[in-house]
Image (cartoon, rainbow, N blue to C red; front, side, top):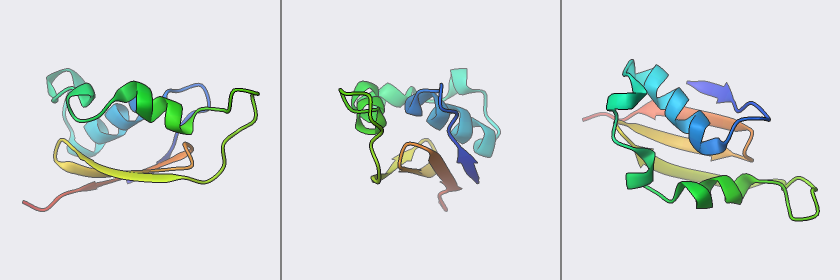
Length: 84
């Protein structure tokens, strides 16, 4: 599944939302994202610079729940179910 991250949405929130949708699971019963990575660091990685200018580029791929997640430029998410 490919989806856009809302400009007012934290990247970490978008990840949980998208993974729960792809897996068809309630996000409250999924393993917390904070157990997998530092959510503040994830959000900061794609946040605007200190002067307010947007960051460009950047890509991060990691595994969360039963999915592989790729964040691109803090604007797009790709979520793919892992084969077990």
